[in-house]
Amino acid sequence: MTVTLHAVRPPTTDTDERLLDHALTLFAEKGYEAASVREIIEATGVTRPVLYYYCSSKEDLFKRLVHWKHDEAYRELGKNVNETKGCTNRLRAIMSGSFAFCATDPRVPRLMFQTHFGPTIPGISEFMAEVAKLRFMIVHQVMQEGLDAGELEGGDAASLSLIFCCIMDQHINVLVRMPKPRKRLTPELADSLVDVFLYGLGSGKRSRVSLPTFAADQ
Amino acid sequence: MTVTLHAVRPPTTDTDERLLDHALTLFAEKGYEAASVREIIEATGVTRPVLYYYCSSKEDLFKRLVHWKHDEAYRELGKNVNETKGCTNRLRAIMSGSFAFCATDPRVPRLMFQTHFGPTIPGISEFMAEVAKLRFMIVHQVMQEGLDAGELEGGDAASLSLIFCCIMDQHINVLVRMPKPRKRLTPELADSLVDVFLYGLGSGKRSRVSLPTFAADQ
DNA sequence: TCCGAAACCTAACGACCGTTAAGTAGGTAT
DNA sequence: ATACCTACTTAACGGTCGTTAGGTTTCGGA
Image (cartoon, rainbow over the protein chains, first blue to last red):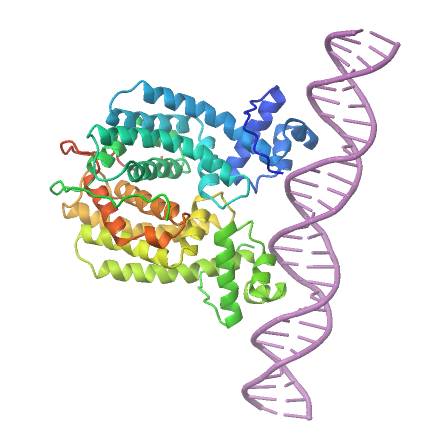
């Protein structure tokens, strides 16, 4: 049981895709546990065994859905970052690119974050941690380059990445739950938040920040 | 149904308190929905009607528990802030005070954040939003004072509070899920994160940050 | 000594959950 | 025509959930 399917299986038929899409809507709205397969198949307009015809279980349905949407976002983000030069610009690309993707379909970040930050669900939480790690590594690499190039200072790449992701993810997480997230997750806000990350919000004389080392173990 | 009990009802008997404490453990570990009343009463060593003797429902059990622990933290935090003068020092007091409280009993932040950021649960999510707002208002007031005193600049009090809470809450949320959170949520890290908030992590010349206005409506 | 409230028990209730056994319509290759 | 695969159907299965009806013990006050 709970065999991880590493192979990505995008939707094959129209019914299949509608099933995944309605699953996205309901999972994003009520969470993995609270959204029942009965609701999903009812919204899609099919019967229950149809779902089990395309997916081996509810867990498999969820993973197919996340893979489907995540790969889309991940490909786009990676491309944007590679086309950009310099740490600051790359951070802006990550932040505004993520904002843009989340603004186009708020269901995706709603599902991602509430599953990632919500209660532990056996089989699901580990999967989401893996998915989140992929995105974190992009940020981590940009931070390391920024430190090596002398554009950043004050801590190791892991600490800096954590702070950056705190600001980015929580803004998405909070704003996407408010009305009209499209009006809130703007490129202007993204650029300003990168500025906050780089220069802070104090009016006083610039001080040298020195974060404690981030210990992965212990 | 779902009548909000505004009156706080702290534990009355030993059994009552043990019930709330084991509920905290299980809610923090598995989440509100996944932790069943059967598990809670089993861990406590009583039978099911005992739970319904002290609480009118599972939802009431949860709210009593959150009130119990939150009031404790809230009183302590408010006292620490009032004893401190100056925006920077107050922010340090909030951050390190929150870190200290969360380090003493990681179950509390685990329950708080996973319920607040997790999937919407009717009756519970609204309650948690109210609870979270109390803490946010403390931060908001300190930010407003900092702006008025000229210690802060670059945005309105709501935007600044959101950024500060992003950094603080997500660090708690992430670190409290890792092993030995007591070793991670240190006063040193708290002070450093306040420095990051004030001065940023860029090595370049100080730039003036200007966040877009935070619109509560629209 | 009797009473009643507080603190507990046993034993079910109905509702919903994820899942599946078994069968069928429709197209396609042999 | 027949065998076969895909895409679906009806109708249940066993399990867990939150909750409660109704009875028992304990014990301080009248």
